[in-house]
Length: 186
Image (cartoon, rainbow, N blue to C red; front, side):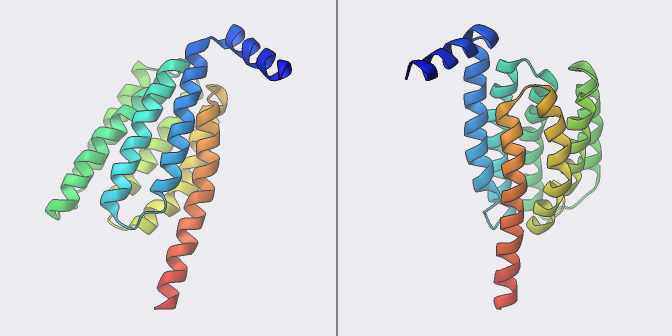
């Protein structure tokens, strides 16, 4: 037990208590993210992804990864507007384009280093894919976007983000296979 306590104490001394609390919010995001890829409707997917983004805003803020924080803040607004747009039956292309531009500008203002380009690319691709009306295509997009965000997370020392993106890949694959199995059973 002393070994675990000493390891925890060393982490606090090395990174600080806020960094560790931030990693805890990353764990909350992992759980919410796994659930989000198991839902059947776009509305539920967008809601849960908003909750994931909120947990990651706090996570990235506390670990000092400001580009990740900004991208997730924009994702909450994006998901709310996409959900509203979906309920109205609109599928215009202006909103995704506007969000990609705003995301690029926010990335410049919160630049954490060269690795910020990876989260920007992943989030921009995700923004386009989330604008599609097919949840299965959104799940498939995770196969491209998660590895990009994973690179950012590794360099930002985001344990929660690194695990989340790895779990998101697995969860998206499970969701794709599960939905495909249901479709084939019909």
